[in-house]
Length: 132
Image 1: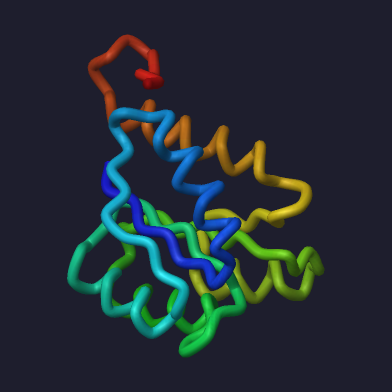
Image 2: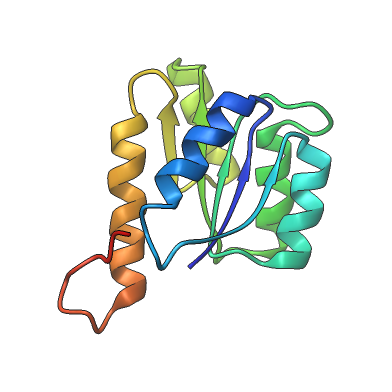
């Protein structure tokens, strides 16, 4: 499973990279701190999963999401943000996010969702996820 991450926080990027490194089947194909670069990478690299922050320099995560959904309905997109309001959640879902998680409260949920996606990808591995 090819994964792209976009967040303007180096700490969050490091945490996401560490989480993804637990799964041999998850290949990190790019990490970006800028929404404009993330959108270009989404278009050219065609990941299976993108984890995107709402607020970034260049384009916001919602703008990235809205643009990529015009041409790619297949990529799974997780919005990961510090904004926990229902308003932000609704905007993300309306723009086409598959999941919405907050960085403070939901990082464990994010990890479980990614594990589930990896498990689906493995398909023939008798419901086991290979963790390195």
